[in-house]
Length: 240
Length: 370
Ligand SMILES: Nc1ncnc2c1ncn2[C@@H]1O[C@H](COP(=O)(O)OP(=O)(O)O)[C@@H](O)[C@H]1O
Ligand SMILES: [Mg+2]
Image (tube, rainbow over all chains, first blue to last red):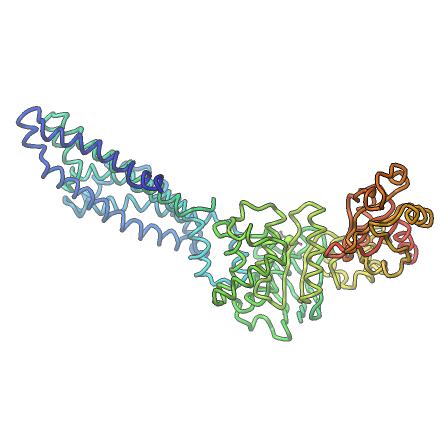
């Protein structure tokens, strides 16, 4: 009981506390008037809200499309296509996120929506790949045992394939979310807002204090999310 | 119950059929063992029966009904299937694994629970201990038991068992085989049983179907197969020591009736009784049982000399191994050889003493047959 509380509330609170303390200190003790003007609670909350929106919308979309796409590609009739897509995805993943963003800027222009769309596309990749690989990796004898006992294909998918692939799908989701938190800091370049705003502003006015606050928040969100998902997975997957 | 006519399977991209023009009829309540070298088409035949593979040609009739006309899901729900690779679901507990078919059939929870626990007892896994474990926490033999329980839980009239005892050591295998036979005696299901081990085939079967390179060579009772192999291949398969193989066919209780041996002594027998019986007995050993007729031990000449008590129960020594009355003569022979004595005590399921058989008794059986 104590352990559960500690894992779920204690550790996250400590992480948040450290960064919060840093922000409070910075806002209350500005080094000069520029910092005072640029680094306000209002601004910090705004960029956090923007960053969270970028993350939430793009990740929700990417998870739905990635998982459904991965499932579809793992069906026997599309299996060959699945292998091809897997390769393409692996190549796609090597393109730097800034290049993706730049590409969408030239095609679609500026704004929050374009940033969300670019992040969405970029985050689909690990989820789709892992969903496909996870289902593909289920030992065929297990599927045959299920079929041989009269399980319906849809039930085999939901009761056997997806649960067995679950840890791998979650691993893909974690990769996506960590990449996404990082890449979302770039959204500011195309007017998407987010924590990147602080960093870019800080760079422009050459005030480390502002840069540091943006970077710390970005790092915190990546580490915290990764930690929480990992712990959640441990709770759900009891069998391996 | 199952009739196979001209069954053929050619896998895509292959020219040689994996199964070729197979004809086979299996009566209700019979165990038909498919035996043959690895790659001869046993698994393929099995998977065509429950339509995991679609036959390239030929027919399978289940109770006279063409199985291609039965919905495959319905067909498979009514045929218990033990896959060669066991195929337990790693993310489900043992309980959930065994409850697979009841869940597919949407049984009420209570009924499922009752049946799963019954089956776990039947295959010798204590539900208290095992039901919440995951397959990774089980030994090979225990997993195979779960595989068998899972296939049997909905009481299907037909079972397909693909090398169900393949992944275990010989001693565990012999025990699983005996348990299987005991269960089958009560359930009398129609069973297609695959093995590549001719000894197992002889022991388990009502009829044996010998396959080679996709073709059925001979389908006969084990006894006929041993006495009249159809060709060189079958003769080689059953091997040269056919009279020894017969030991697989006969159960201990069958010859126990015929051997005439002195009654065992009870644990409170006096020294004089022990001495007298030691002289008379062809075992040169006296069997001692307790008041409930449970085997207590044996007394040899040396025990009598060392005699450390008044009554037989005080100075008999424990026997290292016994056989059950449904074991085969071959099992009995193994125990004798392992223990290095010329006899073995027979007990029943409840460990009641049933009698003793000797090497001489086995020799008589082999001699009569040849
Ligand atoms: N799914 C499959 N695809 C192609 N060939 C197969 C397949 N399954 C089995 N075979 C081939 O069919 C033959 C018989 O295999 P199988 O029935 O598994 O043999 P057994 O069970 O007697 O060892 C083998 O030559 C094997 O390579
Ligand atoms: Mg096989």
